[in-house]
Length: 470
Figure (cartoon, helix red, strand yellow):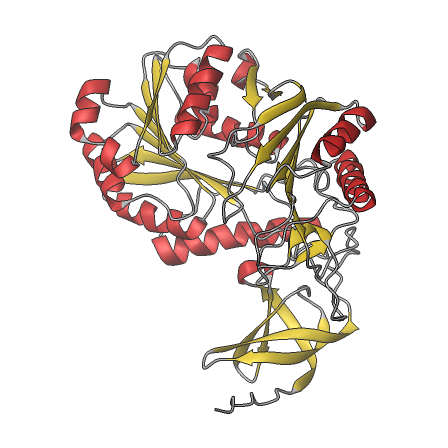
């Protein structure tokens, strides 16, 4: 059976890019149809090749930039346009912030019919490069190449979007401190020189699988090498890292023989140094600083300085009183709960992931905070009238759900508990808008604070203050 040949789409000249769209792509309009185009910015004029056409929209790529927008800047990343991780790096940061603020407003107003009169100017990131405290890299026997050669070349870097088995070799990433690049390139060079086999994701063979690099603001570093098996030469690589980089505070390894890359359920072994690094976060309004022990599987916001500012907005909007009981829903490793604990009587945290709850309890003990309690389980099943009866009706609720937003049963329980205030933190303004509309019969939205945690990407966090109606 012959495959139907797709119709060759035209190149459309002199298309004006008008706006920012979904997934970091920009928007143009051609003959009344919306065309999504990556790696261009509003104000650019370009020739656009249509690569996919649907009934209501099309996708294209710029084949020739005719006129550069005044909003355009030179990307710092040498892999821009191929990596796919920082699609807005060619857009002036002030314009990035403006687009993110508008994204939040559009979602809240159009999807949730939220009154955005209380929206504050977006909180931009203090650092727009070298702001990440964690990067994960992948070893692969197949390198992504823009011009295919027919020869598989091993690579250490990032997965290419939509291609599961190929990795873009990264020479320099500008999102983490430059020591990250030095460590990664040293691992690559050592592995190549000593014949350590990269992982073949199709056949599930090879030794080197992933490399995880974490660091703190005060210069502590954790390096985790993930092996598919401890083949000959693995120990030499670990000794090389230990001896070459005295900056490494914690050098660990994990053996992952599973069919997928997840390692949260696997034990980590310390090769040298400590079993953790420690991040310090200033307390709110003069409260003592908090210390968070970070291990290989620990979740911690990847932009440490912006996390501090995000949590400060949460504390501000919560308007806690000394006698308050606070529920922290989707508490993770308890960072928000511990940030608020010294301002109220008690905090009750709930989280689905058992390991995160263990980390939260450790963090509480580590900081000498004893007015918090943490519970693991499915939020919709844990947060019941019986749970509330046993742990007290909350005066304030902080909720920070995953991208899918809150389960409808959780929303129903919030309406039944009727806390004085709800502070809703979201990484997805669209599902936040849906949930705010569901809460509208009992709550008025006050201040709204977008926060940019991830410069050069389309992602944005948003904090909303909800006050109980009289």
